[in-house]
Length: 75
Image 1 (tube, rainbow, N blue to C red):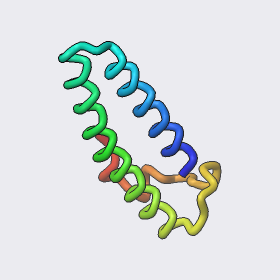
Image 2 (cartoon, rainbow, N blue to C red):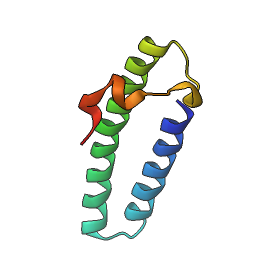
Image 3 (cartoon, one colour):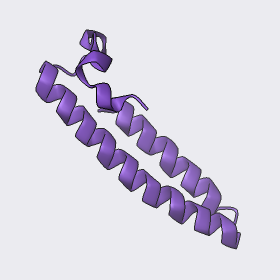
Image 4 (cartoon, rainbow, N blue to C red):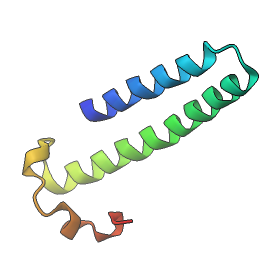
């Protein structure tokens, strides 16, 4: 969950920098970043919950064989 929180901080920082440009395209870009942040954070929390329900731990080191367990996650 802390990894997702760091991702949220970086998304908000990026959108704030776009808003502070006081440019129309910057504000539109910030809105797109905020919407994308909502989708990506929701998906990451869903994925974290699925992984937790399978392994019963939040320790990243103990996720050995994660790709073999979830082959649909490979792009």
